[in-house]
Image 1: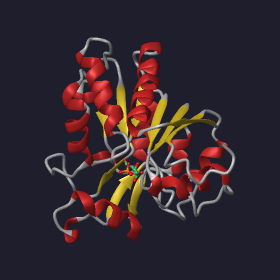
Image 2: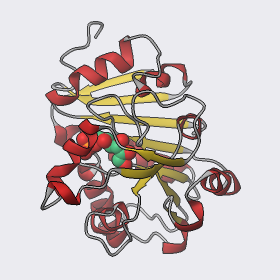
Image 3: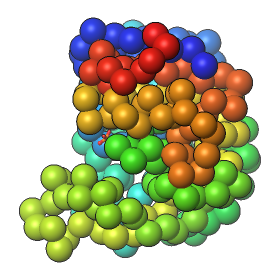
Image 4: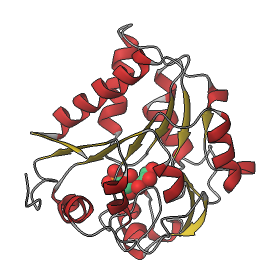
Length: 239
Ligand code: F6R
């Protein structure tokens, strides 16, 4: 694993955007795996700005998002489809038919098949949950798991409630790429920011590889770059 610690969320976002842009420049037809949530918002803003300035085209890129809440359509403001439209897709030249979510006919291993047919993911962007989840692979998820519908952990439901008007609106289920699906990506960029991620980051990078901390499996991937800010690095022992 390669580890880069940045001084701030802004620096982290900018660095991540440089890496993603370099991937696209090296291979304009790249297949990207995308995450939602607070962490990549700055990255997407930088990619949108690069596009606006004429420095980056995503016209050849294909995307596969990690996950989507079960039952939320693209019209729902808190769906991950709406999130991607708001933060990235609405600002760049990505072809809508080249963007994919695990919805409709793609809610299970058909998603993995679609990823394979597209040539496999070149670069997967990941955030990490406070409980160590990647995608919505909650603690206890099998390392062999594939794209499937899952129940969200109580902590995840609570963490996600900040985006919904009422706690009763927060979905309890989602469809997520599996851990084996994620591990097939050629390169992985794991991003984390803030003190609330420090414990999960330390367990993922320095703890035992175990299904109770899903992100720990990344220690077994041959090309992972971990980009974190100083707060998220606070519990690491071997910096
Ligand atoms: C989002 C996803 C999740 C998030 C994680 C961190 O598509 O798959 O694993 O990356 O929950 O979320 P934030 O960035 O909001 O802290």
